[in-house]
Length: 346
Image (tube, rainbow, N blue to C red):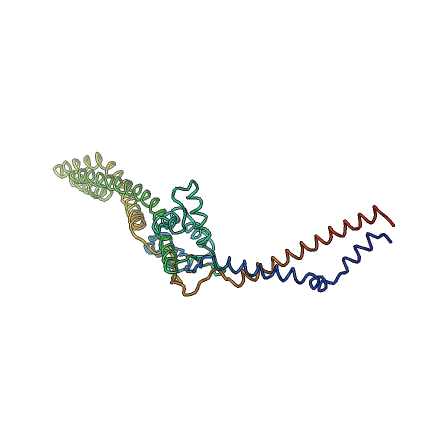
């Protein structure tokens, strides 16, 4: 059998416990050194406290559709919790630059995080620090969790609650831009239609001044009276009725056209008025956009770092690295020995 194979077989069959016992002294020294160094490092890590806000998104976006729609239209439930789509929308808003910038400026987080304001990459460092300390997560129950870590427990709770409040103001601002534009369009159409109806009423009053109030009935009655006067040979009555029929014939068509047009205009005006009132409510009134399950409060115990875990993991990782290094050194030494033996056979 080849000597290399024998050597490798012998080496691979080494007992792990024997190997550790053989190198126990160096490993103990390495372990102690790792324990001491990791303990020192763990003690220097700044403590952080965690505050959490849990909230559900609301399904209602339009106040008018939720509260002012007619009975035959399906209304939104203002008390219903949002689902996956609403939770995703909430996460997008919470992660927006607008909220992040407002929080950073309001609490002067650049100075709080110890970032040099003259640094070329100060904003990048600030946003990286922000993201490492503040997170937004969707839970399995379709709620959204805001978590804030900070060395100041009071500040952590205040920031968490403030971010929850900023969600509403940010979403409402975004929606209000569109709502105000819609209000302007509907308002313009509504008042234009109001003027059209007013002109139609004025025109109708002019025709009414000629004695025409109901074309069909007046035409029918006047024709019947004319026929009766004719049968009686009443020339005076016939002459008066002929004048009335002439007026009816001259303005009757305009009256019918104007009446039908005014009817449609008023119908459209009523629809526009309803829409105008709904859009006005959406543009001027506010409903909460979330349901807060729990507000943040100052934590009494630190959440980070868990020092014993840091020390334990660091010590074991160092010991494992030391064992691997010793194995590699022994392999190199064995390869060199085999090489010299093969080169200088007995």
